[in-house]
Image 1: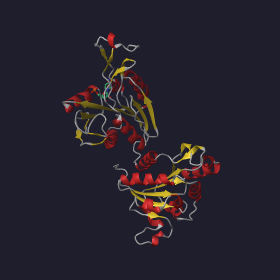
Image 2: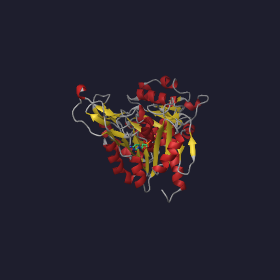
Image 3: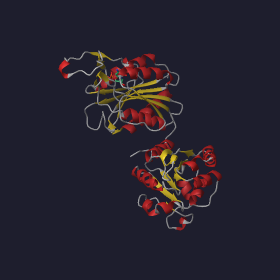
Image 4: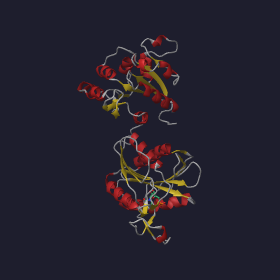
Length: 405
Ligand code: C5P
């Protein structure tokens, strides 16, 4: 469950387009995360999906009429507007957008939008010609200028049979935007560089040396940083993971490629987190043709890869530099040694071989260590929560030493 959503008051406004059925899934996902969601449906929205479907998915009420307030226990439009931490309009039709842009208030949803001081997110969904119409675009611009947020629709085949922009974005993307809007923007102005995943060191075209790192920790760090307002670049080794929106991603294969990209981007970064499990060794020679079984000698000569983190520690100027240390034994001793040797500002150490922690899991169990010897040991928790705590610590430390970092 995401702590950003738990207990948050969200008004889900639903206006009448074919994408109304997708709002069912959105409500379900928000309720699963323990957000408290009140639904407002326009008259046309109710023609696509019955209010009963939404009622089954939230105990916080489905409102369909300005005069619902006369139902016992129901909120009136001013109460709903004051109760909301966030209003999400999904799908937002051309009509509901036009009304909101011009301050019309002729039904419950438009009235609540006008009366609500909370952030508003409009998720337009309609036919591509309607979406591209300059009047609709001008209305969206008015909303943006009045501090509302607009999530651009996805492109593809539309329900009307035409192709183009106008699809309601995937639920995942809407939720990510909600999380961004609910996050403190305390990393605004920071340029965060994160490395993630494993590296692959080629032996021949079909064989390589690698490790089981999936990149989940690094992807979580990138996601959380972006939500909190940072400009984020993620350099990752091979992984099937896809980054969330707004993250610039560079995919590499070997440690040498990762080194090149990290060194290129390091000077601009203000926070650098090296969560990648970089392979320490690579084969001395790469054999360009597949080695035949009968030709193999079964002996591989390895050479050391550059220690990228150590190089960064030497070059460091304004950057806050965070390393990871995965250890099978003497966790604290090894991590303390690394923080000094590599000139780091923080190290995140995690034991390998424990259940629920390390490679491939959604959770991890880590210990933070700082150059002044302070440590903080955390219980097993989701990697996303660990990412949040890493940035909390970075910001605290950066505040303490403004001149130095
Ligand atoms: O010394 P060790 O490899 O355990 O240190 C782990 C940390 O160093 C991680 O932050 C990892 O990304 C980084 N590292 C690196 N280059 C290497 C090996 C590790 O940057 N060749």
